[in-house]
Image 1 (cartoon, one colour):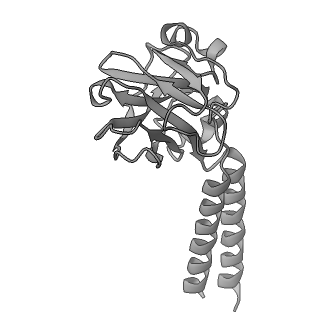
Image 2: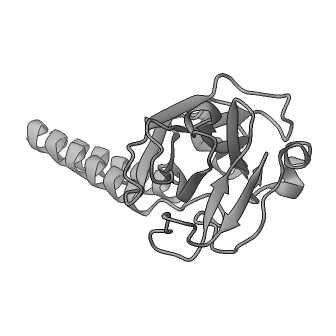
Length: 229
């Protein structure tokens, strides 16, 4: 009986985690740039977290429709990143204080992903997604190290490729900075494109409650079984 209860407990936990991941809300606003809003300049956004949260910023980027050989997969617009710095990036700030209990328990998993593409003839372009943590609405209050997921793109402009990264949110985090990045020297003097970004934290606060209730129910059931003569 103990073995069966353990198996049921594990199965329910796996189901809840799967459902939580599959239905987690995307915390990024305008994730596919369909609002056609030009990003703010990087220094403006990073100097005022609350005002610019949920809005894209960039060093040098524009929102564009189909351009040359590059077509947005499911929509009308995409982000075109250019520049001449070592790294060309765009990003968005997110207030995650509503996840404080989960984050401070050390059980919050964060996931960031984005689609990348480069023009025909560009081979070996390097792209990445990056998550940085902050203890307050201040760029100079980082909370531990950033995490990065990198990607070397092929030279097939008809395919969009995914870069992603996942990790445990550092305890004490109240703000998150999500970035999409190109290494400028790998773009052969041209632009890089970004589409369909996603930032999630799992389990979500509501799902944590469900998991807790499920665990309590299983514990009560187990005690009743053990109490039988």
